[in-house]
Length: 404
Image 1 (spheres, rainbow, N blue to C red):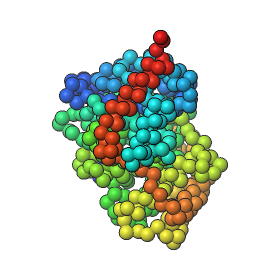
Image 2: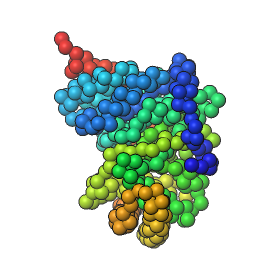
Image 3: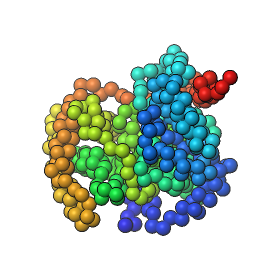
């Protein structure tokens, strides 16, 4: 436990009164309504965490609505999810992001010069759901559907700094300890062994303010955050595994750091990715996408040139810093009685270092942009786009889920 303040405001959980938070957000519900967006894959309805999340959300009456951004391949899957979420008593809407109606809207946008047809995955689904949520919300919280340690105060902690009139933050990111308290093991390898030493490496090459900003976040890859609808309308969402990093970069460009904060969500555990056999799978793909996002940040925000020599230097320094961190994590784990396999951690650093070389070479030869357009631009081309998406969701329910 500490009370250290980072470059951005850090809200610790010394003794947060969760009931008071909920009461305050409830009192602001009329003037500052808040929504929650949950992106899900169809297969996640089979996982126990989502059932508990729904049970806990039923107690979150301060939420005006829940928007489910669904990736489903068939009508049968869509109908199953609609039925599944009938247990959620809060006002909610299922957005079938792969459904024929929304696909047609996306295709029609291409005719207006906004081409999203090549994008797929979580980033695109979050983008669509954000458009719908901003219709009636002052603030929007986001979190994944696979959180094992979910509790009713998750959305409240994320939303409170945004809706509280005495604070008026524009963006709030959750942070937590990735510890499995049942298995007594330390997780979060991509952040611990890749992102943190990589950021230290990049900062040794450049003292750019944006790198200091990134280093201020205690868990850069957290998928739990909240923001005002105005901010959500003006940022470009990345469409790959670099979503969280790219999102932070967009927030930096669109909001003063005085209006950005992070909050302690306690212990946290969720499903874990396989390492993957190559750059197109598992953690290898995740790390490659994240590294590419950081290279784009370096290109846009520093004087560094992404050359072969630069990448070689990053590779060497990253590997040394990653290995140094392993000794520190081992000491931390040993003192806390946590399982820790140093050989396995070394293997991950070796793998991440290889990805740096490969992803870096790919970026040098093809520095293509994977950021989706912001909603402000989309609405300038299709002014009623959000309403069309919302109406498509309602029409899907009527056609596929209502008898007669």
